[in-house]
Length: 330
Image 1 (cartoon, rainbow, N blue to C red):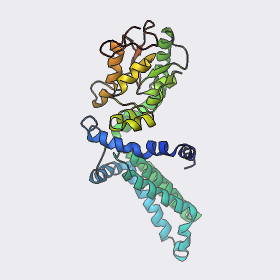
Image 2 (cartoon, rainbow, N blue to C red):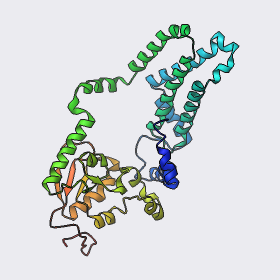
Image 3 (cartoon, one colour):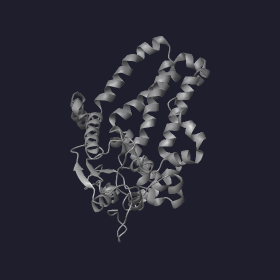
Image 4 (cartoon, helix red, strand yellow):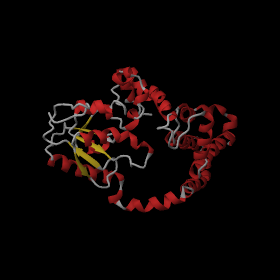
């Protein structure tokens, strides 16, 4: 909650933009997910789908244990003799705040459409906080008695994780070279090397990509229109022209004109494999780069993009178009 306080600055600075980023954005997302291109993935749209989706996700081993622990902690607080003689203790600020946070997280999980697995995590986190707050209300003697149960619940939560995921991912903890952050940094270094070799050494040089993290890690600049990665871009077609202009949003249909006008120094693609349904998001970038004569460089297995298109020096920054409306040599 403390970490979220800085967001209030942006809410007061531009309330419309704040609401667009946190609420109105989902209107276009809903339309996108109802379309043929967006109707692929692990998400839920209707209330019935959300209930089934949440049940399937929360019913996994560790989540069940966490919810059971939080419930047991609350029941224990109510059952201790001291509480029956002083029920006002139930309204102590820490416990009340934890209960409100859990209820708010639970309600908000179902408010968002489409519902993704990530939106179901806050209630689990708040359940841990709620259990801890309830545990803290017990006297020292009861806490000592409950401690073995708490430790056992934590161990069961770990053990009941998806066995396949646990077995596959645990060894990666000791393979530092395969950590995502290390791979991204290594890919960024490779990207930077090719950029400098092509004569683009200025940190202000902008690279067009729907995966901006690699560009930023390499020390270069991104376009504001693509700063959110694919999130606004993929649903931009379902926003009005006024919304796109007001909130600086690029769409699949407007990407061609944007690239013709800006003619970026480089274009980074490869965030989506051609076999994935969302590969269409990068098609305008690839088509523009290949028809405009950009030089292709394969960066290797890099998370977030592995193909770099570099603008040849003879194309320059000026925009010239041929009879098709595509950039040509000035």
